[in-house]
Amino acid sequence: MTSSLRTRAVHAGRDDLTDLGLHAAPLDFSTTYPSRDSADEARRIDEFTAGGNVTGIYGRIGNPTVERFEQALAELEGFEHGVAFASGMAAISACLLSAVTQGKRHVVGVRPLYGSTDHLLTSGLLGTEVTWVAPRELAGAIRPDTGLVFVETPANPTLTELDIEALASACGEVPLLVDNTFATPVLQRPGRLGARIVLHSATKFLGGHGDVMGGVVACDAEEAARLRQIRFATGAVLHPLAGYLLLRGLSTLPLRVTAASATAAILAERLAAHPAVHAVHYPKLGGPLVAFEVAGDPHALIGAVRLITPAVSLGSVDTLIQHPASLTHRVVPADDREEAGITDRLIRLSIGLEAVEDLWHDLDQALKAG
Image (cartoon, rainbow, N blue to C red):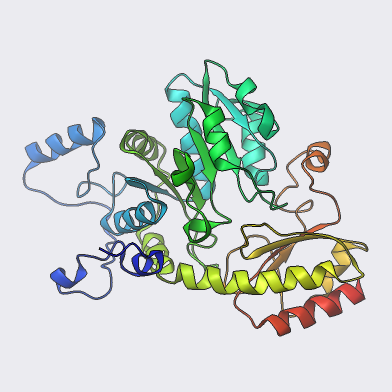
């Protein structure tokens, strides 16, 4: 079997379709699955309770369409299992609850993180306690009750990059969770560098069209079993139609990320030379996101774009622009934002599939207007 990510993105989760006489993946909307053998259903529920991956009983336990997406994403990330959720935050919540259920309520976090992730960790709503550290301080922050080290790289919204391999080494036996939403498996696979849990807000690049919400975790069998139990108990299931759309989105993921990244690199270079731009942040890894700090009013800039979509989120086929301090990171206290490099003049661009010259014309006129 080929190891090309581009080829596997097309075929992962679909390898059995020809034998089934199908071309498109089947979409199963069933919420319940009838059976005349209730003794066998009892056996399968016991199997699920013991950590098995079971479908064909009830939609909250599992769905075959969603499972295709889970298997495909796990393969692309290089893991044995994937577990999908109703949103990225549902996936994050499940990972935190998994640590808590093991008696490991302490989390070590490296800022910046997505604003809602930061808020969830800081608030302790799920019974966790967080210690925020710089990467070099990570090893010293590990405690006997540390259940998780949580990082993003490139980070939201500053695009700060972290050395995943070094962080994994510093974690010791504590699982390193990497939010890989920004890079996707097209640009990096954290599992190859020592991360034991890789998480995505599937709403973003995996879906790719701004019309589906979901989250997914790639991990080993033991963690997947815990996450499925938490998903069953909390009801944070991914809808089958969302699973179908996300599986379809994976097939074009390498093409979309590669094309948008090429455009982003050009725009980052031009923004760096623009007199209205104070600083540009673009990862060495590359990618479809650009962050930059304007010399003037960031709100005036956002109000002046005409082709680019002024909206929260990222990863769509159209280019999105937003002001993190007002939107994605508004729930983070101002002092913590500033310390993490999220200034009031910082703008985040998620590059889509438009022509680069059209995007540059819109940015240039908006920067001049601001």
